[in-house]
Amino acid sequence: MATIEEMLQELQQEAPTTRRTLERVRADKLDWKPHEKSMTLGVLAMHVATIPARLAEVSTQPSLDVSFVVPRPTARSIPALLEAHDQSVARAREILSSMDDAALAIPWRMMNGSAEIFSMPRGIFLRSVLFNHWYHHRGQLSVYLRETGALVPSIYGASADEAPFQR
Image (cartoon, rainbow, N blue to C red):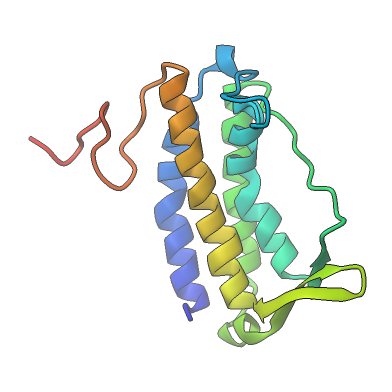
């Protein structure tokens, strides 16, 4: 399991990449969605922007009941979206910095009323539900960018629009 310091380093490493992805969102396409069952671009972008703080905050609680309705606000402007991201990353950093490595072993539970759906150490929750979930939706956002005619940034290597490691 990762340490708090390693998680903070990962947050620091991934936040600028996520911000670059959010910067590419087209303000004139915030209501666009690829399918009737999909989130709009504005909702997905705001979700990506706010995942770090929301899930870091959830991790400080002993459990979450699945009946909780996840708020799905939409981005109304790109500056507001970027501000939400910056605040979310700062808040996640603050929360993670307040933990010690022993806190990562504390059980965290997903509940349905009084029935436990699953339990995992807090550190595994943070790895899976915060970080991996964040990257999953960032990847989804990169597809939305392509479909709306925006340039897709380099994330872990070259994209069709950026090749930062090539001369």
